[in-house]
Amino acid sequence: MTEGPAPAADSLGIATPEQVTLDFPIAGAGSRCLALAIDTLLLVAAMVILSLVIGAFSLLRVLRNGGWVAAIYVLLTFAVFWGYFSLFEIAWRGQTPGKRVARLRVIGVSGHPATVGQVLIRNVVRAVDVLPGIYAVGLVAMLCNRRAQRLGDWAAGTIVVHEAEAALPPPVGSAAPAALAAAVHLTAADLELLERYLLRRGDLPEAARGDLEGKIRAHLAPRLTPEAQALAAAPRGLESLAAALRASLGYGGPR
Image 1 (tube, rainbow, N blue to C red):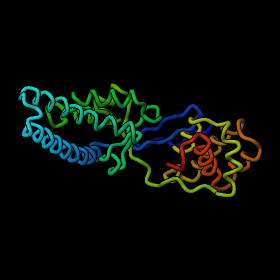
Image 2 (image 1 turned 135 degrees about the horizontal axis):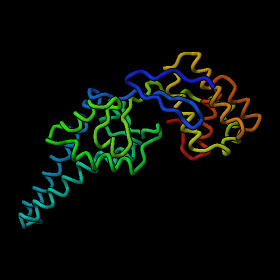
Image 3 (image 1 turned 90 degrees about the horizontal axis):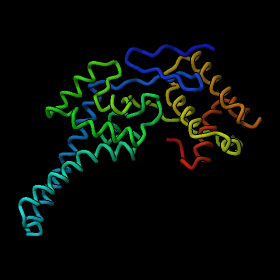
């Protein structure tokens, strides 16, 4: 079987079980520092608000014991710092506000979306990466490996990649119902494969696109009706198939 193009030096090529190689552009220190700067500003704003709230409770003598005030402040500070990254990366599928602005996303080294466990691990280890207060440990770790992984990424098995610039094209409306009837035979893993390819298709040479689309169609064909196979072979048929599969799995519109 023909192999896909070799990944660039600053990207990671991941071969899926369907023998399709997808190329993920790895985010370097510069873009990750931009995302971190935005997240840090939001964290500082949150800490200012937290300080004002704690101060107001102290002035109103709701919290009369200074030791309790300090303890509550330390606990809430840790919760905000750790919870900010973890909750956003879980809710936004690997993104924080800073990463969203910088068009970055955390994924697993397998190319699949980062799991809840991976997100929690990488953010627990953040306490080490941040040392001695300017992310020096994390930055040194990123510079020492081609995947630009900090210690938290190593521990969790994650990488940070650039998001594709282009959004998924809209499906062919008239063909979507036919695909929807067949999409129930496909799985969430099939949807991941389709969407990862469609989001990165614009970066591939035309010959490579044809080769990869052939492999994807061959992988899906045994579980498609003849009508759905014809749809997948039509121009923009994979977009319609992906949209129908998202609907059948209850995911809503294209992401």
